[in-house]
Length: 206
Image (cartoon, rainbow, N blue to C red; front, side):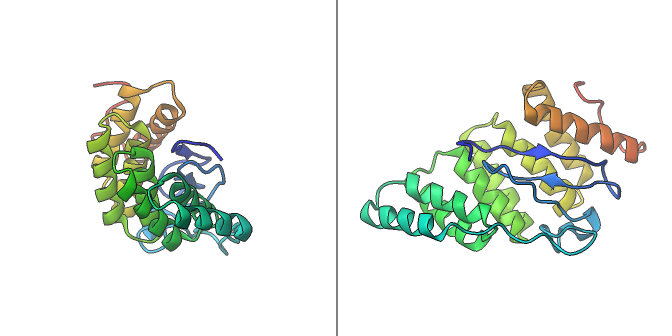
């Protein structure tokens, strides 16, 4: 498990042909996303068949972290770790609970805020996800992982291609050589190819 929020785009082209996105946080597991027409209704679906089985929860680790959290009510770290653990197990309601608790104790952590937003998205709450990403960017205006997630939710959760394009272009401008910048560039190129009539800037242009 990585210590910071990461989002990677995975194989496929944009609308219709896309195979999936990993809209993760610190997690490294691939969760295929639904096609755009279904994304708002079922953000965790596979879009082409039965959904993959959720990863198994490490219940012993969850109990250990919960014991630590109870014994140290001012410590955000075990709460963040519990959020990560439940996110990995695709138990998003519990991930939300623990990320919220972590943020109460450490409200200036943009990674936890963004993880919370991703959890909202996977709980079929795209508007809450976007509001949380806005909060993350208020904490850290150049947090590119948040912007990449923001673009994905705008595209797949809200069908707002113009908004998604602007978010991804900003990622490319700020961090062109990072995994986030490369994923944003691929998304922009795929969008431009699928929708040539859309006023989408070429990746890397202002």
